[in-house]
Length: 583
Image: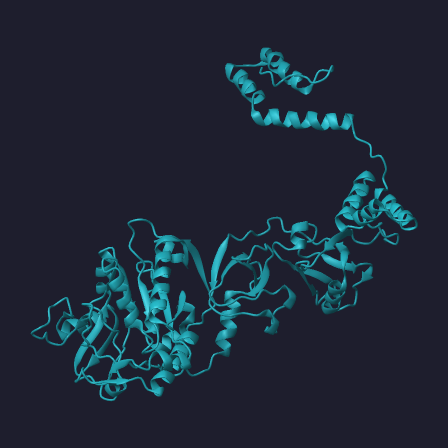
């Protein structure tokens, strides 16, 4: 055996005994395997470490240091009083000042606590008036700090008993392991709770400071307590428990905002889940409405009649030629064009279908794009005039080998100067209508008898070239692209304040008519108001689909911010719908 097994004293040490054991046990071994097992076991480093710890503790017990005195704190106070009554020299003043410092006082108090061995918790005495017929009780003492105890109570309507309704995961009660769901509460700090309402008991707890003593009759424990798997969700709405009349305990509720990632800790209660903010270091869970409960009550609040679909107008024409080949505005009509055309912005689903959805939570998982995998589709949405096209153009110019845009389809005849697949994909009206029926278009419309649209294959074509596809569409069509195939990163481009719009767009010009593309006009006050109201409508109705909100206050700043965000999407993990990670 190694020299590690050497007794430190005159008596045989544990190391020496272990060193002898293998040779003593070898005659009893039935096979070479047994001998090998014994040898390996007694040579394990973990065993050596445990023996070291044991002998060190044994040595400490044999030579336990005895404190010189157990009242150093009192002695220091007496000394300070004695010095105050005598003429003070410089050294005396310095000593008094030293003894009055908080950390010195704390150090002496800790010394006395250890010297007196008074650091064990002081448990209250058992009640003397316990009846032999009374249920078995347990006395629990918890030290309350600034955090809540992390338990809610309820009154049993049949028996009137006060029961523990739930234990908040990660809270003080949960960490103690002493209080369980179903336990009956009899007393709090010696105050009987019989006949009291839960609100009165909560008031007693909130006013209690320091240690709180509970007298509890243990409930019946489940043989197999449920253990929910780790689950993360993205909140699709704002929530504040203070204004929620349905929550059983407002103090136990947890507020969050739309877009926050929540870790669901427990779904034992079908109405109220326990969750924590994923970004919060505090392990304590809070109550949030369950998905089913929130959907149910939001559905009841919804108006019986849905508003008619809203359409965002555009001042740009289908055939507007841009500096970058293939860069197209999504199919939107100007106010002048809207008066003479129909069927614009048809899609697989209507706006009313989207309005009927009730956004609550979306289960998500962490996703990082692997090298060589297709890029996520980048979708830009925003009101007319906010600068979607300009942002796309900035990105294309910055790196045309990395970014790409779709080429739209049309049923109108090709003009002499046009090339198929460059300005448009030119197909027959019959084929266009067939593709519409087969749900191949994410967005399409009609102008002067000709069909225009964005085909799903045109998106796939850009992505297949290992490029980031930049797509500009109406927000109500976004949900039809939210698939594992495209994994869209949706950016909402938001207009700045009205004053900023007047300042930044005062010299901007837009095409005012379809037939004469040289005819331009400046933005009007009506355009600005429409841009802001349209942005508010989009954010209110579709904000749960947006992963980033970008305020286009300055085009250069906004484009740089967007570029930085897209680089993070390509290189860092993001939360995406869990179904996207299972493909």
